[in-house]
Image 1 (cartoon, rainbow, N blue to C red):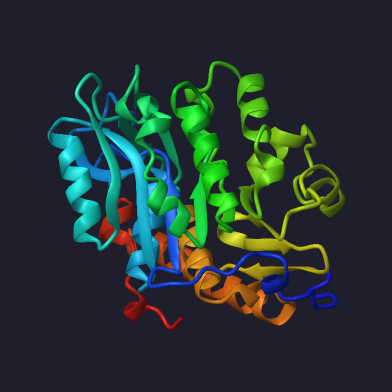
Image 2 (image 1 turned 90 degrees about the vertical axis):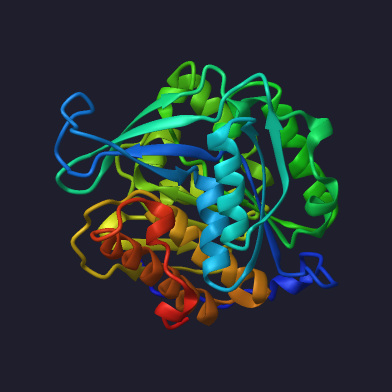
Length: 341
């Protein structure tokens, strides 16, 4: 793959600029939950001697990551009206994430996830959401004001699995897009939560062509395209790069990432670290990208995108390394003062 091709026009020409006090706001939509994480790797859930609780959920992780980097972020979602739900909402506030878009449900509990850590730091999940409060967010409960302020609106695919949250998700995208927001999508495939593999594929792709920025993993390329060679640029461009897309990023784990725009493509190598717990590393990467994109819409230009993605990759690698002493995502998210951005 060539490192860089010809530069593209500034995104300022194609995306509506936000103005006002919160014009750098990144609004993250979706699930927030409690992770139960064993203190040691390499054991099954049944073998784990104990578990530690930690806040989780990809969109919430991204919001906290952006705030830790000095950016402005907000979270929209629903939690159970229980101790866990109120604890999570307070944690957002403590991390300087706007939680005014959080709603509480007295009829459902906050979602839980039990995580097993393999010896290489990779994870397996067991979810309890039957249903959980995040699945029950109503369109009428959306914070329209936050959505209209967003320079970037970021979301995943878990909120597309069932109603009423699916309709709320689509409505939130519509409001944000109409207000000139950049739409950012990280599918974050969790196949066990979907009724079937086909339902997951259809659900994820149902909103694919509306996003301006998409981050996917190599495993997701294989799942979505049916092609075994996830390194094939032609497969990525032909099957996943839609006409309205500004930036597509493929994360490659420890190897780094590669990126595609309409005008150029390239690769950023990862920094070799011992991965103890990779939970939230991809979310930290997304947070790094979006924090820089919110403050500089020219990121899509050729020379800038490689530099900024390299910075985000550095943030991702730091999370994998730092979690050696502080497992799980929120404690491991570094502040901007700990990295040179």
